Amino acid sequence: MAALAGTVAVVAVVAAWVATSQGGASSNEAVTAGEIREFPAFAYTSDATLAGYRAAVANQDLFTQMPCYCGCGMHSIAHHNLKECFIKPDGSFESHAAGCRICVDIAGDVMKWQSEGQSTRQIRQNVDAKYSRYGPSTDTPPVTEG
Image (cartoon, rainbow, N blue to C red; front, side):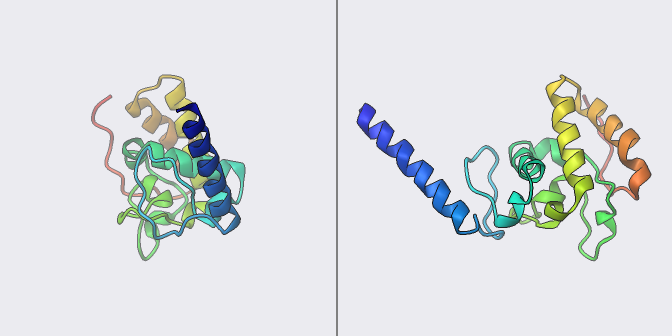
């Protein structure tokens, strides 16, 4: 049984390496929260960017309640929240955050504040206070609980 587990682990590592070396997952692949997976090549532009994509996948509900202040709410296909900077409404990956430092910075701060035990409402207030100077917000509804 231990040999089988070791073999499965090796196969998983090799599969991850192959996916990464071949550019990662397609941006059209659906995203499932908590699923261990590879990301599209654009998510690997920096450690912070990859951390943002990982956080968005693992914390989709939280990211849906956070606005973005990079101006992406004014694009032709407007984002409505921070999650949409990383994950499209259809569940595929969005490349926007890979080239946007504000999106990545907000994601990092959201995760930091969550790890400090702040409520969703407190995190939202912090995002608004820190990032509102950068540009217009997405049309994210206010947090009503927590």
